[in-house]
Length: 314
Image 1 (cartoon, rainbow, N blue to C red):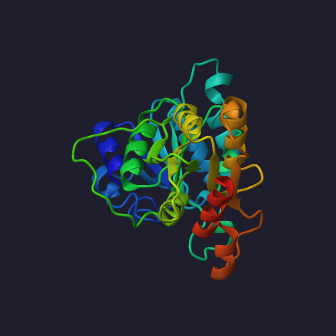
Image 2: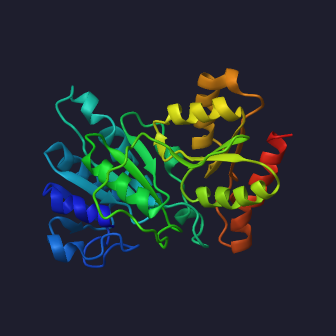
């Protein structure tokens, strides 16, 4: 990833660790060529021991480095949950501010193409309750680079969610350096009739549905929330004050997911601006099936988004 390479070149304290991140170049080739350029110590291949190397990353961050820890698949990081929760998120507080933990934890997640239940995890719902960490989800090459650079430069621990089906996207990005904010949502499509809040891969399902909705006479406003913790309530609130209707579309599980937290935040802050109930389309609360047709049934499809907007705008 260009953003990671630029930050390693700019700052010698930035290092990478994880399974097969070195000469293999990472399971999705995000670290391709970095071991040759920066050496085996700054691009460190680890054993299959997520709890151990994540803990090593936290310790490295405490002592002055800026480690980027890759989970070969985000589901594997459940094995490092203790390090992420009890150490990564809390050490700045429990040390009385003596230590900062400038660590980035990143990797591929989400529902892919028949990867099975264990490799189709959406860990944002697991991590959102951990105090002390930030969470962002990239959805385009442009924001993947900008968010990666911002996460590495942050003094806080950041979990960066990448989606397994978005690595093949191509986009022209600026030649000059840019860094995005970790706390800002992106206005993808301005509109007047309904606010659709989404992130990661579902951005593309929403935009596909938006084409159908426009042909039917609707004018949806689409926001990629990007920052999963904290939410950009300024951007979200301004949109709700204009449209007065909200649809949340996520790939996360319905129970205890990002959508549930976002719905609660909207009710707490913008209740008086709503003209109807907040609708939330989420993945089914089931293990993701291996069979492709069943897998499609468990995640939100564009036709469901169209139907939900039509119901909201009656």
